[in-house]
Structure formats: structure tokens, C-alpha cells
Length: 284
Image 1 (spheres, rainbow, N blue to C red):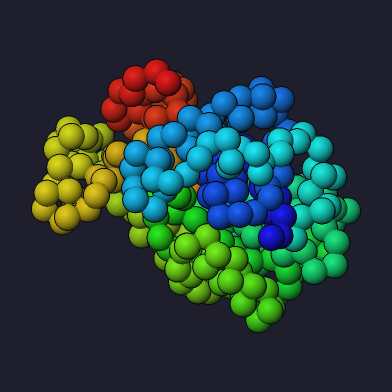
Image 2 (spheres, rainbow, N blue to C red):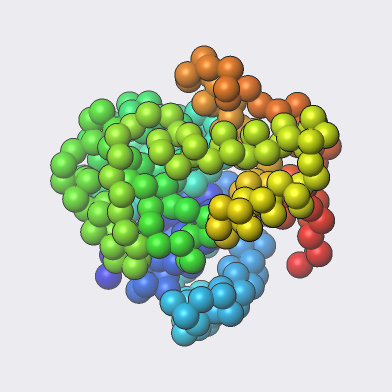
């Protein structure tokens, strides 16, 4: 099968890498941070073991087999052999644009680039690549191995061929594509970040405790996770960055970030990845 280059070995990057490898792709997982890259093989193995226990779909995963298909690299140039590149770096437009400019020297003819972004415009990212028609948004849901759909986002210049190939790629991972047009936040995060932000305001205003807010969503609305549990899973820093993007793009006060979220991020309370957010998590 084809080779997939995955940029960013954070939460989403590792999930995307092991999902691609579990479905037969050779994967090159790249990150510029030596410490993150050094920890990635161990983290990926732990993730495979965890997901094996969480769903019949992932129950047959074998860690050695999946890790055997993943190569870890600090050299962006190694991605030149990839057929697909999935970018998962920090939710910051300037950082992403710098990366896409660097990818001009990496991506050969016919290579498709998928931005796994929460809120940033696919059209803006495509403008930084020499061939914007080859850039598409593929917003995988978190956790990637367990959720069965992905938003495929059509930028202004995204070609019909790129959309078709993106749908085929997502389908090869056992997921359903839902194709939407480019607008910051797309569908899922334009809605979900309002939920998470307003849930944080409920705590900020002393209306309810986090457990109460989440219980109403789970028991009252049938959601599998509450909005504050979801925020902790995503990472509160990512939530704040995404809200800032939405506020800047729409200039709409409904996206004004809750002060408690900002304070928690400033204090290093980022959710699951730091061990403390709205909830406390045991060390790995």
C-alpha cells in the first residue's frame, strides 16, 4: 500500500499514525521536537494496547505489527517518499504556514496534503503550498481509532481529484467521509467549541461543578462524553488556541474565550496530557 507521512507526534499525530499502520499503510511519523519523537514509539505501543481493549474494531490490533510499519524521523525531507501527508501540528496559523512553505521542497507531483486542523482555514494553508489544489482538510475526530467519521474540508482551490482521493483514503481507514466547505471551525468545531467554552463559563460563574455539567450532557442528552471531559481530552491549550482562531476569524463575541480556560492553560493545567484539567488523571 501507499506510504503516509504524519507530521506532529502529539496526541492526534500518534493516533493517526497507528490508525494508518493498523490499516496496512507504511507510516513515517515526523516531529521537530527530539523529546517528543524519542517518546513516540513507547507512547504508540501503549496506545495500541489501550485501544485493543476499547472496541471490537481495534481488538485484533497487534502492537509489534503496527509499530513495525511506523518509522520515526526528525527529518522532514524523509516525507518525500510519502503519497499522503497528514499534518497535525499546533493550532497556530503562522506555524502551519511556515511548515507548508517548507513542504514545497518536499512534496513531489501528485502528493496530497491533508490538514488535520480544528479551526484554521484550508484555503489559507493551501496558499502556502505551491499546488493549493492538492491541499485538503481531513479533520479526524479524537480519539481517531474509535470514531468512525472524518470531516473532509474543501478549500477554495482544492481539486475534485483531491476530494475523491481524500474520501478513498478515509474509507481505507474504515471511516466515513463527510465533505464540507471551508470556513473556520468547519461544522464539528464551530459547534463543539461553543459547547466547551460555555461549559467552562458555567463553572467560571459558579453555576455548577464540572461533574454536574458533564452529567447533564451524558444523562440528559445521551452524549458519550461531557463537554469538559472532551476539552480535557483534546487539551485545554488546543481549545483556547482554537477559540482564539474562531474569535479572530468571525469577530463574534460568542467565541470569546472563558477566563477560567485561559487561567488553567497559563497554570499548565492542560487536561489529560498534563494529568490535571477540569479533572485529575493518574500518571501513565
